[in-house]
Length: 78
Image (tube, rainbow, N blue to C red; front, side):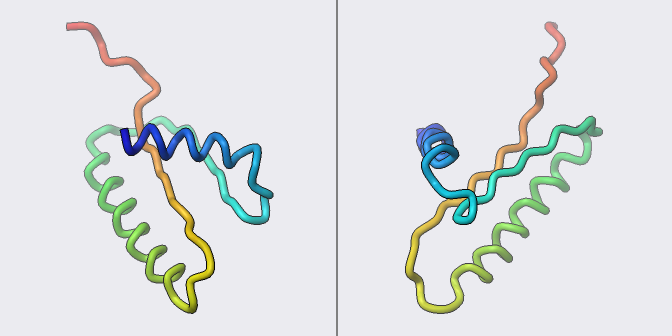
């Protein structure tokens, strides 16, 4: 539920928040699924670094960061 709610907020922000105050990106790629554990580790490390950067200074706003990594291909029926 938490992730669905965050995705809904992101969809709202896409049309309601000035582009100067938000960042939306996406990338589609062909991957070797055996690298997923490494990718997940990199995402977690990046979020930790990003938090350290953004939480310096005097807070004057509240933001959320959502990152989704999921397959577009369907798994074969067994």
